[in-house]
Structures are given as structure tokens and as C-alpha cells.
Picture 1 (spheres, helix red, strand yellow):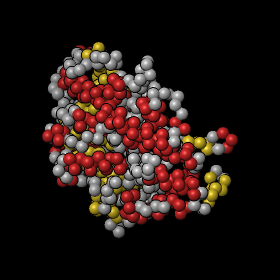
Picture 2: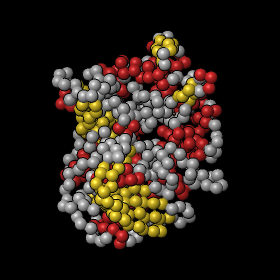
Picture 3: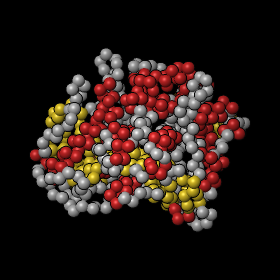
Picture 4: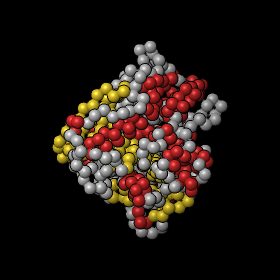
Length: 525
């Protein structure tokens, strides 16, 4: 399912361009110098479907494409901000789009989704290569030290620049400023949205921050924990073995929401014990394998999350029922063995930003090393990219609204981090009811990172945000859907935190009408 909907209700009459595309001039960008501006009409754009960002593709799209290059004094950067302005059917709104992984922006795919829905849209490369999994082109300078200027661009500065440029170019082209501005992003893009609310609260009227990569210095280290555990225990379960543990957890806890559908609806209340599988056998690649205590121990430690050498929890682990094939990936090794395959983003964080050594061997990290690296990550980078400031008073004061949804089976960014942040905001800003007036969170059972997985995925969360901002209709649920293994459509209403969806006991279990929201969400530690 898309988290960048391609359909939207057009609330504004189609607006003709006020000036030719090629006549766009340099906008004023505080703290930056504009190097060049190039406006070009692009006609009959066709982009094929792309997972999550653009699931149905676009065709016949006509836009004014404006490329603005800028630089910041002392950084020696060259940042591209790209803006797409629909030549017909502009809905009067501006949309800033987010990136993913190490990429500050998602380029033409996100722009096509925005412009295809009637928005003027903007993206930025932050002055980076925009490689999702590899920061090697920009992380370290020629002296081997962290390139703090480009890291600042990635963390925050380029996001605000993009909003300034995007709205100014939109105003020039159409002869009036956008009536409303929205942020739309997942993962890194979700973190970017929360950074906007925290640091630049006037940039957007509405922010959609999905599966947000907040608490970056902690969660990015937690992504490496499964690899450390497997290396230290010299135990590398194959994906088939990991899948056996996942399937058993679902078998044990599937009925917690009142219906058997292959999804753990309330993982907080799932008392899964991986050690009960010890001694059982499973067939993997036509070979019978016996589950060992060491395998169960690896699974238990991954689910519990990272600890220091005193056994104190440092961050969260995977939710019960979540696949292990993201951060606990293993692959065939030499001599018919299995070895770990670290998640590239966490692995590169350690090698480039903590050790400042691209060739550092992360497989040699001990539990003590890990504790020290975890502490270093937070002490050096929390203020730069932590994005967990709970004071959203300035954003609230502007009338801004924010929606976050997060899959409870996210294998990359731990949903308890989102829950913890929401609870911090409640403590800082007057409690749950006060925060619900401008910031609502939804947890989607069975859903993976940014919309993958097996549970129903929110279909039009941006439309829900628009209705909240422009009509005052605060969302109680997010309509969600998926297709099950039989090809049938399954619908569900994702309840706003702290409620969870419960089967009513009668009616079609594949229909949202057969469920109600109930108070049962456990608190994060």
C-alpha cells in the first residue's frame, strides 16, 4: 500500500502559471547562497511503479521542473533542491518529501507521487550522493574526520532549505503562495518530519512522519545488536530457523485480538518463550535441523534488545512476530557454514562515524566494545541527529498537526522508540489529551517497515492529515488494507494510540466493520 497517495480531493481551482517555467529566479535562502536556478518544462512524464513510494506509477504528467543549486559558507557543499510544479491541476498545496536510509531525498519518484496528486513537490539531495545504504562518498573528509557540515545537512539544515526554496518557487510560478504545506516521509523521511516539527515548526501545516528514524544514535546501534550477539555466541541461525521461531510466536499469540489471521494484533501482551522450541526439529533446505539452546538464546537476546555488560537495557529489540531477515540476516559462508550479514546502515554508522575507519571489522565487536560504541554514538551525535526533543510547543502554537504511524512488525526501526517518544511528549506537554489535539500516533499490527509485512497498511494517511489540518477532523482511526495469501482483501481500522483493534466476536474477520478499538496498549519500558 502507498504511503504517498496518488489521489487527493482537489479543493482549489486549477491555477495557471503566472510566469514561464524558465523565468523562475533565485529565491532568498537564509544562511545559504544560491548558485544557479534552472526551470524546464517536462511533458508526458511516465514513471513505472516503484515499491511503497509509487506503487501504481504515473503517466502523462506535465510539470515545470526547477533545479536550485545552493551552498553554505564553510561547508564546501553543492546542494540540489528540485521542485516539480504541475502545469495543470495544482491543488494549491506544497509538499516536502523525505528520504530513506542515508539518502536525504527520494528524487523523482517522490516528486512524481506529489505532483501526480496535485501538489507542488520538492526534494533535496542535501549535497550528498543520495545513496540509501552507503555514505562513503561524503561521511569523511580528506583528513579522515567526520564531515560535520554534510552530516548537519542530512540531519536538519537541508530540510529547512528545501521548504524555503520549494514554497518560494511555488509562489513565483503560480503567482501566490501555497495555501497549505505538508511534509510526507517514511524512515529517514519520518525522522526528517519530526525534525521539522522540533526545529523548524513554521515550515509545515501538517507533517506525516511514518516509521520515523528518531533516536538515531540509539536505534542505529540497536540494529547492529543481533550481529554482535551471533558473533559472540558463534551461532548463526539460518533464515529458515529464524522463520521457525517467528511462526511459533504467531501461533502462540495470534488469537490475542480475537481472530486467527496470521498477525499478532497486540504483541505487547504476547508472552512468547523461544526456549520451548529447543529440541524440536525443522526441515530447512531438505535437511532436518534440531533447534538448540544457543539458537533460542540468540532469538531471546534479539527480541529483548541490546544491553550493556551489566545487563542493563540500552534500547529496544524486535517485536514478537517480526521477521528477523532485516537486522539479523545470515548468509551462506565458506565450507557450508552460515555467517552474519550486518545491516548496511548500522554497519556503516560504526565504521564511518564512530571508528572513522571504512575498513573497520565490525564482526570483531565484543559486548564490551558494543557498550562503549553505544555510549559514544549518543554522546557525540545526540544533539545533531537524535530528533527526540519532546517540546513541540512551537509547532502546536502554529496550529500544526502531525500524524505518525508505525508498523508493529518493523524489522528495521523499533516501534517502541516511536512509543517512547510519544510518551515523552505527553509528559512534556500536558498529557495524552493535550497532545492528541495536534499529534496522533497509530501502530499497525503485522506491518513492516514503511508498509511491507503481512498486516493491513494505512491507505491514505496524507488525506487524513489534510482533513485534520483543513477541516479540523482529527483522525480516530486510519483505514488500512492488504491482500492475504488467498488473494482476498483484508481491511482494518488502525486505532490511534493507546487503543488496539479487537474482533467483535462476529462478522467477517476480514472486514474492518467487525472490529472495535479497545484500550489495551502496554507501555514501553
